[in-house]
Amino acid sequence: MDNSPSSRSGSVSKGKSKSRRSNEHKRKRDAETGPSNSNAIEFAAEAGPSTANGATRQNAANATFGGEDFVAFTFSDDNEEDDSEKEEVGPREWDKGKGKARDSEGSGRKRKHDEVDDGSTGRRRPVDAAVSKRAPWAAHVDWDRCNNVAEMLHKEVEAFVKYISPTQEEDEIRSLIVESISRAVTKAFPDARVLPFGSYETKLYLPLGDIDLVIESDSMAYNNKVNVLQALATTMKRAGITDKVTIIAKAKVPIIKFVTRHGRFSVDISLNQMNGVKAGTMIKRFLDHIPALQALVLITKSFLSQRSMNEVFTGGLGSYSIVCLAISFLQMHPKIRRGEIDSSKNLGVLVMEFFELYGCYFNYREVGISVRDGGSYYNKAQRGWADYKSPFLLSIEDPGDPSNDISRGSFGIVKVRTTLAGAHSIMTAAAYVHASYINARREGHYVRLSSHKDPEDMSILASVMGVTQEVSFRLRAW
Image (cartoon, rainbow, N blue to C red):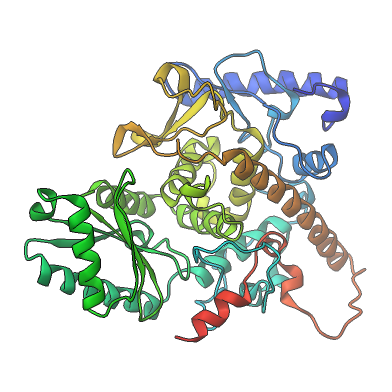
């Protein structure tokens, strides 16, 4: 770890002062919330991945969205660092003395079919793909009514969630597809039952996201899996649901994959694997009880999807892992745990802190994540889940099966981590630009040189996310 003054956000003397305050904060936290588990996991700073502008961007991040809320995790006191001190969730450095944030509802709206985000299409594409509207949700944020940047980003996240969430029409079309598949399957296999799971079941899917289905059938269970998958593929083609089926029989979970003729949806069907159905039921309970969860999941999925980092087989994070990361983040957030903030009214700050935690500070080498029983952390080595050949791997306990590590297949987690850190730095820089605009407007120094005001110019999310023409054109065909 680089302990030189240049790697800090302040001087050596300030660092010592911050370290003392950090120790005091830790004692207060332990007194109020107790250790997260029997190992007394403590918060301590860990050097995150480097970004383009190194210390400059880290300093900006600390000054902008800094707070005591989240830093790295370790099982010893040896790595306490100055950066471990964080500030309150709420008004940030640029907000001091600028009045209270509004609590009014966001003004975003549901998207139309010709306005789409970049969902998972199963194709690799460059991040800088051409866009028709980089941030169409930005047009539905009342930027002029925002008093500070934290409020701006909160309103934008609300608008994005309304924009990206499935419309009633989209969901009905998917339901019709599932019904047609179910009819074809039960006609060929009378004892079969087709059940949706994953993002389609929890309604956390992106536009053009896959439909995951599982078939529960005793007759299929007692027959050769390859023969069953071949028969299932033939059934799908004969029913006119698809023209081509890919059979993946040698995978840990054998499946068939195809794209539907109507709607061009990607569908994955597995056999008698009911864990996903149980997980969906559990996730829906979390969504009902954690208001900010939907926003964090949709933002993260969209961000990673546009970089082809949302599939486990390519080393990225799957939907289940993303959901568990978001749940853990919200469960373990000190101020949420103590009831000091309303997560549903701090979405922008929470998105920034989520990217900061998992991009810069989380101790992937030693610490694993559990969302059971209110959330906790565990020692990977003590759990027997430390991979000494790949110590950097993320470890997440399957809440439906505690013996299963759901993220062990995400071999590209270092790239994901670095990308999250970079996004945090870029969004922090964008926040500073908009803070200057707000200050100038408040002080009467703001002069518009153009008669046309583009709402997208105010977007902070647009600095790291966008909408591609490719996806837009495909959905217009609906």
